[in-house]
Image 1 (cartoon, one colour):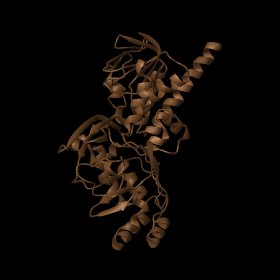
Image 2 (image 1 turned 90 degrees about the horizontal axis):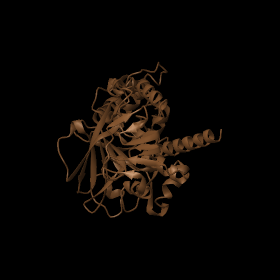
Image 3 (image 1 turned 90 degrees about the vertical axis):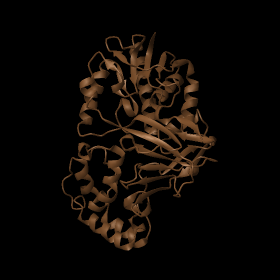
Image 4 (image 1 turned 180 degrees about the vertical axis):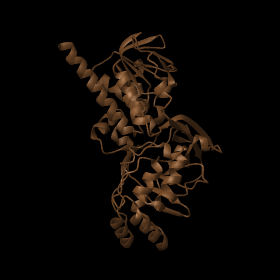
Length: 401
């Protein structure tokens, strides 16, 4: 079977790309999906009378109007609830608001003083040179106390790797921690600054986040081949599994999943990732929040998503745990081999070389796994829309040249 666009994976990236093709009037495309349903990490399942997001918590950020318009064309805005983010951090015996640095005022007085002293001594505050390794950078940026009590143990839990194998290029989105602003916050007993991401978000009223991708897939159903695992890519003619051929191949799945005739193994084996388990518990949430972060290394999970505070009529919560740390299974259990790409020191060079090599063969990486970036769903959708427009427009220009 030969098509113009051969799309690997029916997650948010592949669906957004394909749906944009369809909106542009393109019909020559096929999506290959290894599961029997679409949605990828954003899939939802019925669990204990309500939806549960089996790939972890995903929420629709409100800042990208083009993405919202696109999403609402499949699932109207009136079927979503709008939330102002309420998230917490549990550190030791204390629960404070998120983000950490803006809510130090919520600690007892003595601990506030210790945090303030640590921030004042941080190398960043003294404008010392930026370190290249994660552990050094966290101390440089935030001070020893925030690093040791929260950032290092939390990141050790979520990534479960040697943190000094991670670079710092992905951490620039962390806000600067100002001694002056933190001191003022403690004196006023009020947070400062703004929440970096998902300060406001949408979530479906009566279903899981996967519902919108199910509807998107339904609109594309004649183009999707389910239960079709990609195992081989022949780059001489962009043929998949010796069955499907595309003028363009759009890869949204982990590059590890298939062998390639151009020998990607030397690059893909250097791309690392974290696996995450989702466990549902039926009891009421113990924190008044949409979700909560946990730094305590004695707790296996790093985050709880309080379903009873997000979905109308739902109860219970789910935990998210790095698979290497799993010790128990909840009332319902789901495993995600590919959850988060790891931002290792050499990753930008590795993925850059891989993507450049493949683009020369009309094979494009797209989304969290194709680009090997920890991208939120709204960013993934925007990338899919953008790439579809670029390729269609480029093809139109080529045909009229």
